[in-house]
Amino acid sequence: MATSFADAFKSDDVRSRVLWVFIGLAIFVLTVHVGMPGVNKDVWNALLSKGELFRFLGMFTGGALNNFSVAAMGITPYINASIIMQLVTVVIPQLKELQKEGGEQGRKTIGRYTRQLTLALATLQAIFMTVSLARYSSSSGGVFTMTGFGFYFMVVVALVSGTMFLMWLGELMTERGIGNGISMIIFGGIVLRFPDYLVTSLRVANVQGAAYYLSLIIFLVILVALVAGIVFIHLGVRKIPIQYPRRQVGTKMYGGHSSYLPIRVNNAGVISIIFAISIMYMPNTVAQVLNAVWGSTNPAIQNFATQVDAFFNPSGWLYNACYAALVIFFTYFYSAITFNVNDVADNLKKSGGFVPGIRPGRPTAEYLERVFSRTTFISAIFLAFLAVAPTYIMQLTKVTTFFLGSTSLLIIVGVALDTMQQIQARLTMRKYQGFMK
Image 1 (cartoon, rainbow, N blue to C red):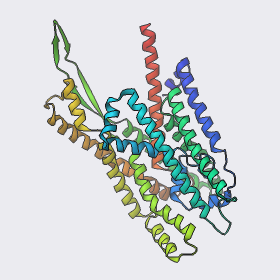
Image 2 (image 1 turned 120 degrees about the horizontal axis):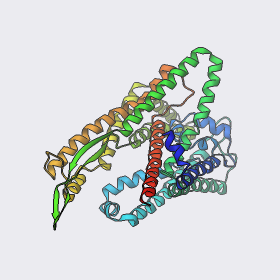
Image 3 (image 1 turned 90 degrees about the vertical axis):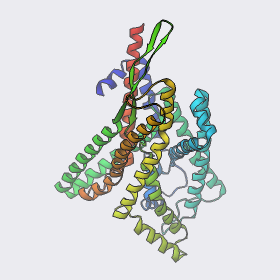
Image 4 (image 1 turned 45 degrees about the horizontal axis):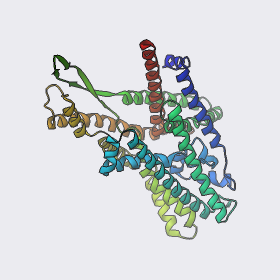
């Protein structure tokens, strides 16, 4: 991997694309520190510390949410829009046909729909966020130091503009850089928080002494082991042998070669954990918002928020059991959407390919379904373990200053591996082009 990264700077084309990625990440870092005027940072940080969902969303923004910058919402609306479009494409036949046979124009059309949906979701999220914070009050005052429709309208426009700018920046990085630009922005947002976690952990270790240093070392060793497991699952592929018959066209024979159909172990990626954690965090966050806005005048809402907080406690076994069950469910659900065994079997039959020992058509689909179910089971169990592991690792090591999230680990490892694979592919293509010339 280090050799490939070094070779990338020897090629003009690959080097310029890598530099574009760094330029894009640098611009993203600048947006993190473009603060919103009229915000009481002390009150805002106190409110952030009470919401688990805020902490989860802040993990993707690189500190923009903590700073309440123009990029406070991050790229989350685009992620939600992309997931919704993937689900809708399966349900609506016209979009599915457009995706399969529309070619480049079809992809551009779906991309335009995704951007429009991103704008709508960002606007709704910004309005909800602004209205909720405008109604919030505490003993230290409100989140906003300014009031009035004009100010609130400015906040909504700034938040939406920040999200749309990051979306444009991500697409520009995809076009001129290497890898997926949106994924690189999410990757950068997560990695930006790690130096703060490490510095805070070292400060606490200096105060508490050798015992905390030992706990921190054990924590980091477990972290490395988790990363190794993620790499193993991420690169895991079940290869189905495919045979193509020989065909005679005139006096020449064609075909007769063998290949394989790769079925990834983790087809769901990080989506299943994002779905599950959003559902588990949402009730607690909604209850806290209601309590912050109306709890001071309504004892029933205070009681409701207390009960919800007790039930959805991330350190409780019931919470983690529900969390793991949701991860398993969404892993099967999303994997079934992204890999349609019937379509794969039909495409093999049309191209003349077959699995040795399996008849084309329905028998092939049933065989692929059995293999796919087994690989998905392995992925679901691993993702469920990865989802709940950080809670118990932090309880075991007593290290709470380094926020370890399963979602962040999956994204970091996945984006890093995919980017290096694309760099290696471009370097290989360059060598082939040089050979052809």
